[in-house]
Length: 486
Image (cartoon, rainbow, N blue to C red; front, side, top):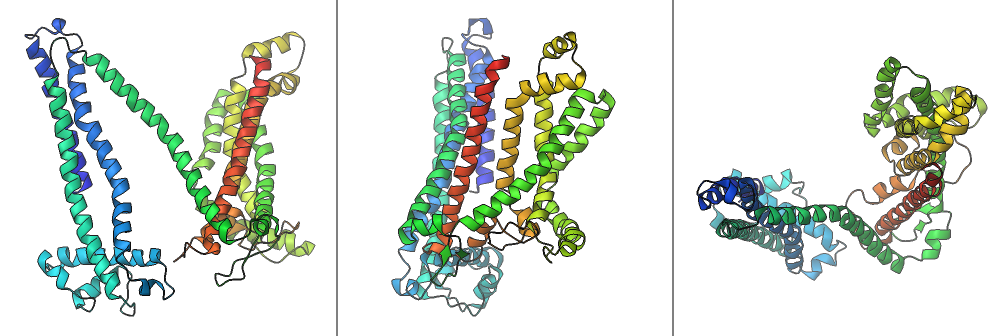
């Protein structure tokens, strides 16, 4: 049973449980809801929750655990000789999954009976056609152990899906029956429902925490694996980045950090003044009509995909800077440069600074402005000496949020700044950032046992620590200065 159908069945059972629970409660009270401890709807909601939530949780857990268990079992069926030929087990498992998908297509689209599938061979024309659609060409050697593992993978997946449907439906029916049998006049349905909802709210709030913890642990474990095969002193103190994937690589992080900081600095030099000045104008000087048009127009910039900004940098801004600034000044001949990416990224960050600063400035109590005017200060003096100091913690937080966004940007850097890992002060030279190299190191068929691939996790952890420091700094500033105005 597919996941979609299974979810629909659970939701239908929950809906039926709601009406059955409500009607059963009314019947137990002789049709008089005043005799019930709770409103009739609470009885129905209780049945619906018990019928749906445990089943959905079980299905989610099954979907998480099932692939890992099956792949671990199937991977052991691949002959060691196939792995020793220079191909990793992970890459072979990707072939196993694609062969299993091709077998499914042969069964569904070519009409081959399920009982005849074990007798198929990789040379079968129908299977070869489906394999080519999956990306496995005729020249690809499929060893017997890989093909056997694919057949086992498919059979285990089908069996797991069958038992998943049985287990989930059994959990839904068990919850349904348990809730229905508990309905009587004195049953505290409202209390049970509210406790159930409280548990759901706590679980929902923990998802963000657990997700962050999972991200950190995955990065940390792979980074530790990386430093076991590559010296950490060469990673943190080398100024050369030259991955080879054949040994002899130089994986120093400093050229990437330099490019990241350089591009982010230029972007902030563009975004912070423009964003802050526009926020001051919109909140303190602009009339209601002007604000109604200008603020949405600025916020539209935040909705433009970053790939569009990257194309704008590649086609328009880069050639413009090269022809009118870099070449006449003798600073470079490339349209890909730090300045190109920084300027375009700065435009992208203007809404982050402007919108947040505008909301923060508007949140400053009007009484502070009135007091300043009462002391004889002009509007500009009030803004400089009262409004901006009062809004300073929020403004700093907005700037640091924009900085975190700039550090994590990828597409604009790829198209605007290039991919050259170097340390140079010339803003019209091509450079690259940490995020670009994370993507490049994990692109294509990668071997997750080589330092050239594992270095992406070390780069990701470094980037995570950088943004974490920025967020902690923003929190410190907000907490330190907010007390002066509360």
